[in-house]
Figure (cartoon, rainbow, N blue to C red):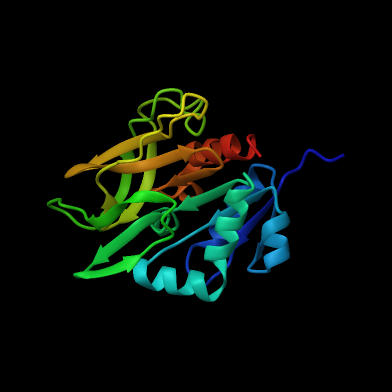
Length: 213
């Protein structure tokens, strides 16, 4: 049996899908870009990209039945990785220009504007990785990752009291103020930055994710 993992990059009209495809292929995955339900459900891993506005991404995702696919995969413990706005839409809601849009509500919390002197946050930044992180395994604390965003999650409210369930690992970055840079929560992982544009460090992150599939 082949050890090569099948990864679907979910194509719902938003995201750097070709960059994600190349980055995943670079680290040895068998990659397909599609919105086909059966293929998205059968893949070892599902990557949900996202660029642009929260509301537009949610509209596109729902029209492609991506909300249902993500929910069904997670209910069966099937890995999903969200990137950039593909991470933000996993939260309860997003607020842009005073407009509130419901997200997938996999995690409680709100996506809101970054409060910083320079917005968007565009360029390279370090991440304060969570203790015991599998996503950042093998990476130095001074590694830099590529960010492009004007909105972020500023608070983490999900607590796990069941001693048999691992608490989410939440990593942070700072641009004007601290914000959530990555989350590892059972089968659902996500990054605010773009690993597919983060060079060797991003390749190691993707390698780490694929190694869990």
